[in-house]
Length: 232
Image 1 (cartoon, one colour):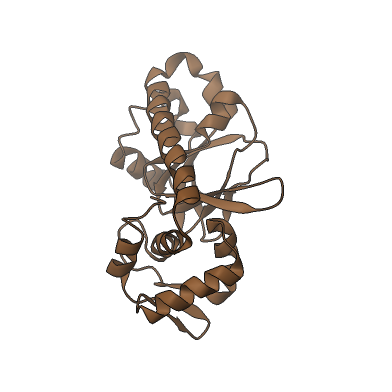
Image 2 (cartoon, rainbow, N blue to C red):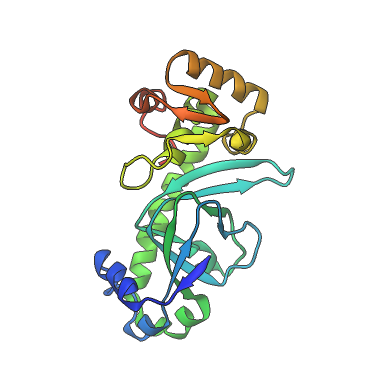
């Protein structure tokens, strides 16, 4: 994660998402702009949270790790999304891990600064309330989907999410074979079963294994199999 010293770009994002009326004006000079490369962590489950982030460009992956070391993907998020609001309100450690899928841009603000100006941020609290309400609903649905949907649906949804960015244009259209073990863990299945599902999808013409990559061949077909996209 790199902090970008570009106030013009930061102000552009504030205007684009009408955040100028959300943050207390005293905080404007304290806002920071960050860029995160694909695969880099933004938040790590269990670590103490000190910064609240607003996702303004790119796509992130949210997942949890159990006490037994198993991981499970919860959702993918695109702008506008707040990262770490629960941790800020409850002053707690990160509930989940968040990782950049594409190049990501974030606006960040230190918790201590938000609390310093807490007497003058009613619009910001309303913004957090709306975000939290939506997030809890989506998280409940996401957990149910992971439990109820077969691996074929989860894999199709995962491939759609990691292969295409927030503007719906092709990013890579492929997933490295070396990432399959991670993918199996994230969608809650075994590596062996995942390979069986990949074989069937290849036979159906939805994807193709080529030179160490899983290449998306039929996005529309994947969308039908994924029933829209259960992770977004």
